[in-house]
Length: 102
Image (cartoon, rainbow, N blue to C red; front, side):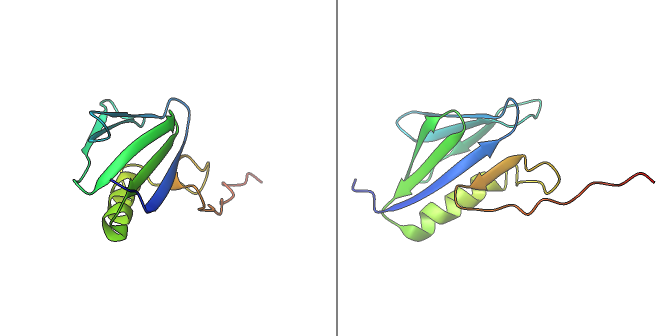
């Protein structure tokens, strides 16, 4: 399969990890929940983990690649106070300031 479209996801957070198994057909995510999140990859998409915090979704159909990448991101979207979560590699999170004491 020749990959034409890529989508890189960055996982930010202490203890957050990802691993791909079964030749890119299964994606396991540790996101701070009490269980591991298991995602089945659609047939037209492949998943690679370069490090345990960088995930690459690749395939020949742009729509399916981006749809699966957004499904992965929706498991733990980035939060605006600390910036933890799953975000696209080119995404910029505008951080908010917390409460201020007088």
